[in-house]
Length: 578
Image (cartoon, rainbow, N blue to C red):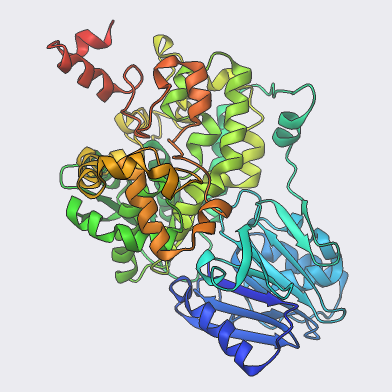
């Protein structure tokens, strides 16, 4: 990934404006510390901060088509670029490519196919194309929103696009997140959704339709293996984030198997884990790393070190959402260590819980129809939360995170399975993400230790150490008084914080960003790792819960049983059976 900034159709084409664009682009140089590029065509400016992962020697941006009439600045990776290069060459014999960059195909595809270019790409991306032949532009974001992008409008009617909000906040009268799975064409001035998978159109149909494809563990396993393996495309050393939970462990297992099978110029697979000393993730991560034979790196942090980093984390992730900040902080600290080891790219496990209903409140789903609908809603909202966290907390240090569970072809398989197969029934041994676990439960050639394959879900902010969340709450208690909470609605009339922790984060956010950013770019209220409204409808015990931790409601998490039992002076196992 990289950082992009485009300022288009401004009324100012002066050297001063060029200098201003360069200065704004430097605000996101952490995303691309390897090189900077700028192209100006009249009153249009395309800037780029490069993180060189593919073709480090010659892939500097902006990129061009053959006659340099089409200019593109790209943030992302295109996995099917070799297939697309062949299609371009077949359509235009003699066509010459200037680089070996996977992103160069975008300029040529736009020349040949126009608005269809985004739908032809297999990867994650945010890009802007400037067509100098008619002084128009085209911008697009990947289907799920793995890559961040914002769009804003200047006082002179100019259009601004950027990887991060910090580049737009001072010069745009309004700005917003660029919607995932859409493109924007200056010819129409409108967004068009190009990503229309069947599970979206079924969800939006009147009456709503639901998938009925029988569960085939081999098909699901092979689809995910293909997704992980295509994301190992890299010209620089890479690794995996390994918390020891199901999702990251499966990603690591598939990557390790491919390297063992085919070899790698980088040697053994590197794996990385972060946590408070003695945390669940550190223990589980080390166990998986030993089983897979990875070169494992374990990083520790203290609650105070995390608290000290909160302001910087909020500046980089550009949100005040409680769950996102809790989980981003350990990831931010770990990414700095990873970059110090010379690694620029990591594979990560985001997206599985949305696809398979892995969040603990899915235990309460009343039927398969509501289960399916909630997974679709969660996938459509990923760009606001987990995708934002994974992208920005790693890119703060120039490390790219790739997320195989959000591969569009894998989603076509996983989201068409009959949702009855995903339903959770602990009385029958079907815990959350049962069908994913079962697909990789191959005793004759195990992917993972059985106790890891069947380990219950932990939120990342819980798994790094339960004292982390408790420490954040305690610090917020010291920072925010009861009187401050009484007037919260007056100070923050939009997205009013409902807890002291949320108030603390919001006050920090507004030291970095204007108040209108809280309205235009950040979703209201805590994400709660679940849709609070849906959870409350499914189970009244969720109603009114402000703590987004998965341990907050007894009855679904093993540690919740333990806490409830201890409160009544009973052994945990006895209480759990009630």
